[in-house]
Amino acid sequence: MATWQYYHNSSTTNDALKVLKNTSESVKIISGGTDLLLDIQQGRHEEVHTLVDVNTVPTMHVLEILDGYLHIGAANLHRVIAQSPLVKEHAAALATASGLIGGPQVRNIGTIGGNVAHALPAADGTIALLCLNAQADIASSNGFRQVPMAELFLGPGKSALKPKEEILTGFDIALRKKGEGSAFNRTMRPQGVAIAILNLAVWISMRADVIADIRIAAGPTGPVPRRLTAAENALRGKTITDKTIAGAYEAATGEVQLRTSRHRATQAYRQDVLGNLLEKTIREAAVNAGVKL
Image (cartoon, rainbow, N blue to C red; front, side, top):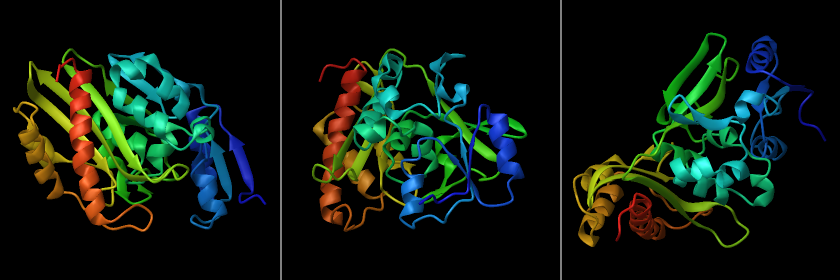
């Protein structure tokens, strides 16, 4: 049984924005719909009068180097991102994360924009984009603007996007330079249950064997996707050793909000997972940056 009354296919962002603005009833943007439709059907989201499909907007499928950045349109499928040579080269963490989202069916229809706009604190694509310092592209009737990824989230499932005024159209990621690399890992429930106990992404810049800069994102570690800034600060200027990683783990446990969840695991187990993921992902990112460990 349909849970909407009107379904509009948009060919441009301007067309989609007009429908959002002029619809007096409840209205939602849809692209892949792998989260939204299930939420509506299972009662986690109120029924929607109008769905505005942006999956046929050509500019939202762009995946190319543009103006010195890797630009990824919000309607790109997880499968496309996971298999893209450009993403593997410049944003390895995102390629890995996209290849782990859901199962093959979800990756063949779900989009990176939907993964981010759903605003879940453990969204794999979101966590990877955070560590990559991606900028989000937002369209409105006033034009386009860019905002840092961290500014898109207000709480679990609550996006900062204005629902009847703005559309998330894409992401821009700085091109990888020599000595830079990234990686993503997750620990999940048993086979068939695609929910992360914890996921973690690292971007690193190495100067010889010293960490010149680093960004770490993990989820779910609180109500919104977030960077682990204390752990980052504990690692900058250090070499990668068991001792420095242990110090970063100690710093991380002091800033995250891990809790026991019947859907995920106990707090104690998730703290152990955090340590394992932190060490594994830092080392993988460093290797991707060209460091021999």
